[in-house]
Image 1: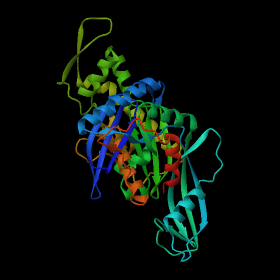
Image 2 (image 1 turned 120 degrees about the vertical axis):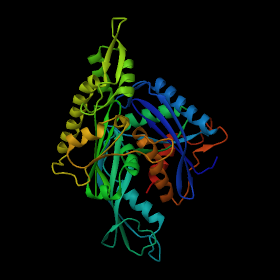
Image 3 (image 1 turned 120 degrees about the horizontal axis):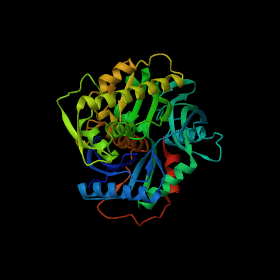
Image 4 (image 1 turned 45 degrees about the horizontal axis):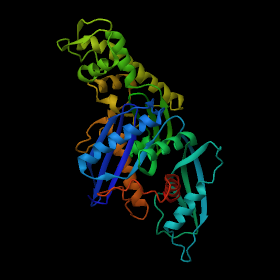
Length: 411
């Protein structure tokens, strides 16, 4: 197993996913995937640490068996309504005698941008540079090697709830994993789902999962807004359960096998039977019956998403339109319905890697893509996240200290 390996951990309401990526000659390959049903997770939040630990271990074991390695360290996706974005400005004097801007100067200006007033219950998760300014010259993406006396940075500071962050840390530590870093999930997904043009023009990235929908707005190449809505695929499942009068687990199976988002595109010749609650008798339904349940709920969900974009003060049409991803987007007929409701250009983002060509993997693959970029920015080093020998009992540095160090080094 190459040491140039990166492992992501995506803890969702429906599934816990562990993805192993390998970087060879600058090219990323997905070499292992593990998943397990989420237990102890409700609407994206951990409500039972012990159950969540078991789900993480199952997903990790699955991925380890696929590749034949021991996973020791993971990059973890984080999202939710506790996340907040705020702009910050940092200024430093270039330190070298020849006034050539170095990695040290970049690190110092990032540290300067972190000097913001934070309530005691919040913690910095990430610092995202939007642009650097050298002696008044703005719009610089990478100032290393440039000549200058004064270095400034315009950055977005990502903060989160200290309670949620530390509970997540504790859960992952109890699963005997080390945390290489927390990464904002919409930011990670954008590296798979969005083009540079879309990010510059203005685009809404919508990740629809089982329990929640994450809506993020990107403009001028950076994330500017993110929020989470309490809607997702489980609402469709519940509607099917009520409409067909069947158990929730049966409704989920029916949705996955026969579900279609558009009544117009449904086929009444596709017939299935379900066991009714309180009866041993199975009743027959067709796909059109199912579509009459699914389409209204999905239409309502897209309308809520559109209203939320307006609430975020984006009343004009986003030039880049909407990019949709997440497990729900795998349903047949959903694109045409989304285009009908959301009006501007709409497309579905799917990772273009063997073994993960499904919208439900966008976030997990994005974590690896983003971590690869971060590692390159940090002097081109690759963090050793997996090896052929178990390391889980080694804890020379606490996860909290490792994350603090990662925050301070990230550019």
